[in-house]
Length: 318
Image 1 (tube, rainbow, N blue to C red):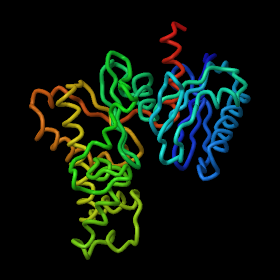
Image 2: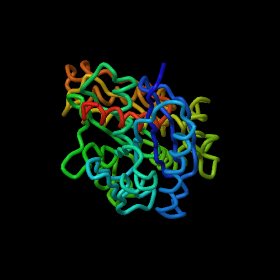
Image 3: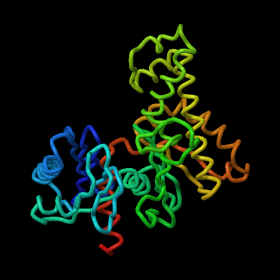
């Protein structure tokens, strides 16, 4: 019988997902709330603490701690978040602020959201048998994480594996980061919409071309119906994803790459074939053949954040 659990918090630009997760990765309870970053930093932090408190209060098991996955540049040792653009956060002492609101009742761990998701895959998901692998999250943008010898690679400035901002073309599409040609401007929700705008005039008879501003879900629905514009947009996305795969496989030679993120799972059938073709065009056959590319096995995003608690407990010998 489960006697211990952790609360995971996945902070997104539009919603905050929370889950009470046991030691086996089972979700015992879950909750979502709007992020509403326009209300200000303090209001978002209050919502997070309130959501955690509600889950803890209803738990019938011992809650060992809180793990928080957050976008932006996250320093897990200092517990800080910098440059979380979608939240409007310049620098926030996230761990300290949440711990204070919870009256320091339990440990709080923080990590970049994509890196937390990778840890979730290693702890409970598709990478349970691996200490070395790459995780790529295709969502609104594109995020990445690398696990080596069972640990996350953070880098000197905590911005290692920001693969979405590798530039495919320095003269290409303008990215929100201010640079041009970033990979996430070709794959991910932002990238698919950018490709739709670029290619729609080539397909005047496409039903997708008649929409004023489609969603990624509408693009996938059109692709399912065989719409040529949708298939072109997704083919561009697959090419960009394959370019990133080539960089990761060529440099790291990983045995496994896990593809996660909401769009990564939903668009798997369209993105992956062209991505694998592009991968094989770019790296030695021996390297490509040694790498298995698989979908994420984690359905609830907050599970990765919860796994931070078990990871830090293991590091501490708990």
